[in-house]
Image 1 (spheres, rainbow, N blue to C red):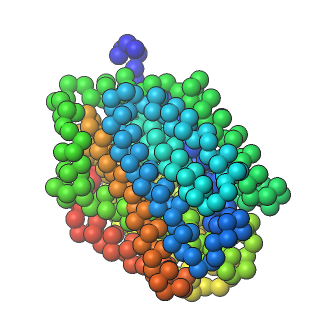
Image 2 (cartoon, one colour):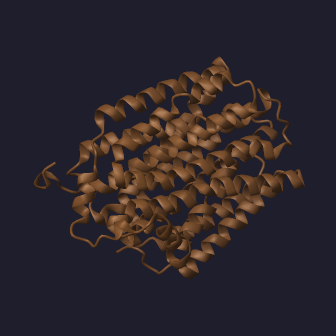
Image 3 (cartoon, rainbow, N blue to C red):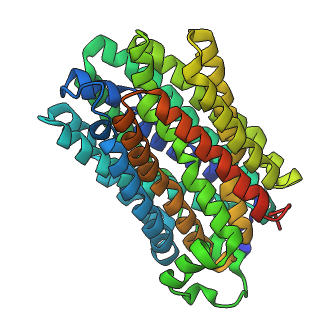
Amino acid sequence: MNEATIKHGIAENKTQIIFQLVQVFLVGLTIGMTRTVIPGLADTEFGLGSQQFLLLTSFVVVFGVVKAIMNLTAGRLSDAYGRKRVLIMGWIVAIPIPFMILYAPSWNWIVAATLLLGVNQGLCWSMTINSKLDLARLNQKGLVNGINEFSGYAAVAIAGVITAYTVDLYGAREGLFVFGVIVIILGLVSSVWSIKETMPWAKLHRGNTPTAAHQSLAKAFIQASWTNKTLLSLNQAGLIEKFTDAMVWIFLPVFFLSKDLTLLEGSAIVSVYALVWGGSQLITGPLSDKIGRKVLIVSGMWICGLGLLSMPYTNNVFLWTLEAGIIGAGMAMLYPTLGAAVADFAPIETRGTLLGIYRFWRDFGYAVAALTLGIVAQMTQVLTAPFLLASAAMILSGLHVLIVVPGHTDK
């Protein structure tokens, strides 16, 4: 592609940006279909009792480990082989998921399907944001992260409600199967026919910068995870914020069922969390470009922590819905801002790799959170305990960012 024809900017590349937003929307639908139905399946279809918390969390532990590894791999692979190839591979891997859910004879099949889901999410979601960062101008990183996460998490919310409704009509396995097949086929076909390779835009961003791209993955990993204290703080915040999302994914559906809410009612409350999270990022992403990242990250961590703390001590649908919205607002403040902050510190030539390392730690947080929360719930046999632990983790993590990260992380 002729460099003279390449221009950076969201407006300048609006058609391709829209196609990329469709992609992340479909990726969000793919994970969203598991959000409220799978925890319900654990009991109704596979006989996991309500107190078997470690078994219940196993599918999220597997998802987190696999998605973390895929994020790390995808960043490096996309720098080497291009974004589009990695995106298509992510959709191909997803094809067996709805079939495994439909025919699963045991909970282990669900865990295995979730492993493939982790591969799909790690490859596809990473590529949608990397491609948009390639297409956008450098001063649009917050906005790009915001619109990307808005599209993805709006889809998570929509999928949660739709699948709960289809499951109510057709049964759990059949409802998830039909929804999953349609979404995955649409994702694969559209990735082949509508998506352009954005590496030429990335190379133009890079220009004549030094060849730090040859830095080994191991060296980059050590730098981002230990020696660079700012990146370390941002990476730990990315990991810890998954305590909030793991609570919503695993324990909120169980909590609402224990309060005699139906699956559809519980799904509606959880969807408020995802909708507020997704929609508010249209504001918080670009806002971070203007006021800096730190204030939004710290405030978001603390708001999530306080929202989680209040939820087990209230006892009506209105307050639970309000608290879900508050937690979603906190996630909207911190989530796109963390990714943009990491991109601020990442040299252009290794940005894909360093963002991959950040996403590794962020999504490894699913495994850490699910396992830790599951152990605490199993040992105490009370649902209040994981709420308290997740709240404390969020508040302390935000304090770490407040102390370590410079006041303005944007360049």
